[in-house]
Image (cartoon, rainbow, N blue to C red; front, side, top):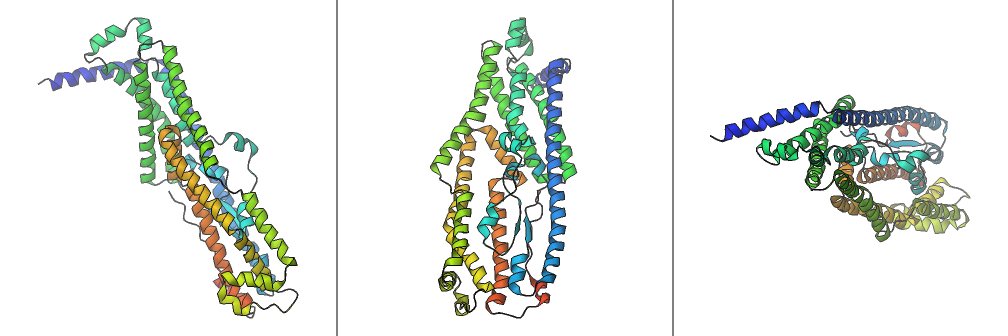
Length: 428
């Protein structure tokens, strides 16, 4: 019997607070600011992804034409292997526009050939110096680091402003339930922020072709994250202190969770998980390859045969230069830096694993990492792409080695069976 009056009273409070919010120009100004920033973030992401897709399409077409033209001019297997390049790439997913992640600072395309692979993997295009300094403003960054600031501004003085105006006690008395009015007010303001942030994301996802489960997961993450900050702001807003004190406290908490914890954690992780640099791997491999010109050919072929015993019977070198010797010492170059390359991969994986644990005490980082995982732009996706490049390069060697070591007759028709890089379809 008491449920209906309570519901009616609660609904009346919601309508009253909604009317008050609708007349508050400052709230509307912040909502519009959130809408504008969200549009800016998703537009920048869509533009970048569009450019990456156009680049891949252009390079893929040019790569095929160039390789066919080169192969037509070749007269032996070694020349074909040496002169032909192969494009490898990691296409952006349907949700990559929202969280560009590591695609900004790591290579997502390579042109490889059947030489030592380490140098080809660790060479990359020079990035934009400004982006390297400040990063890219994408939706993940906007949601993780900007939205909490908006919520702090909108919610920190929910009660203190009413105390200053002398309306606090009257509002509590007329609300029926003391905290109900503050919950409603906070929910309406935060709900408006969520709608203004999520609406451009939904539109951009429809344009980009994002899969529904991915989009629903992203919206759920955003809603949970905003609910966390709404609770934090509402809890501190109940503190009987001046609005300036509450605002300063919330800002200090945001700086601690969003800046200090991630920065300190990264320093600790980098110190505890040493990582060989790409430059060290590159130099080790190049030194091994260059020194092979001065070594006895038997030494190189012996080192090659240790890892590839199936070709041990074909390692005799009778001429000053033979292609099988040349590609053998390229392979030995990769064998020389294998330990460094493996340590580099394992170190990145371990650093990412520890960063994932750290993110549970740094909610802004947790949201950003979660959105990057949905967009397949995180470290694990990068490592998976590198693994596919290595597998493709190994398949090239498997294609050419029988022809080089058995000295098979050169036949252009055999190139129809040459492996091609199969990019994983753009994941949503």
